[in-house]
Amino acid sequence: MFLATLDSQKAFDMVHYMILVEKLFYELPADIWRVVQDLYSNMSSKIKWNSHLSKQGHRYNIHPEKSTLIKTERIKSSKQQHPLEEKPIKEDQQTTHLGIIKASKNETKLNIQEHISVASRTLYTLIPVGLNGQEGLNPITAYKIYQAYVVPRLLYGLEVLSLNATKMSDLKQFHLKTLRCFQSLPIRTSSAAVHMLLGALPIEAELHKDS
Image (cartoon, rainbow, N blue to C red; front, side, top):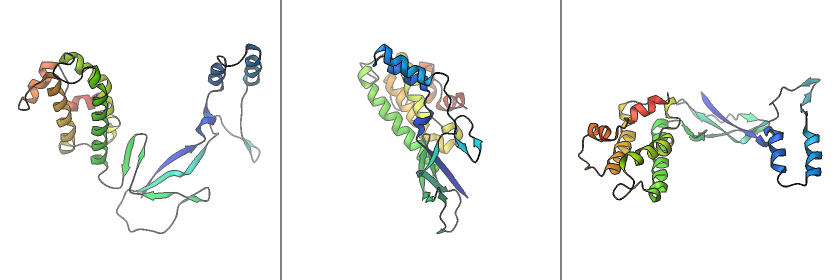
């Protein structure tokens, strides 16, 4: 069995024309802008093929070079190609689709590692505003910023994956370490105290909010 991730080609054909006209308003003389606006007013576009007209929104193609096939089962390698518009779709061990890593194995682990990396980079960018524990913002304010900007990046898309206690351990460790840093607490501080002092939710609860 294969999982196919498809990438649309020429997505700009789907742009709302009136949004473009609005942007032109600030760049063109008024009389020229009215001419452009009249050209697009009450306009519709369709594709005619074999005496049939396409439905609205069907003006795009699938990009074969940016689409990927992932093997989801352990099967013997096959030399059979899967063409799309006469071009073969490449086969790979993993790819990223809508921000989620799709892989033939260790998919959940790869996603968790990548999300923790993204969340860490986001934290580092927020250090200048005071998310640095000691001599920074007060813990409650730091937690609110963390909850608004870092947690969504940490948990994005993970609700669709199968997560057990073992797989959640890395997320839990990152979450607790960050909350301890905000409060300048020792590493031996119990997780219950770390959450209660801030009124913070465990990472499992944060994940369930998005489910």
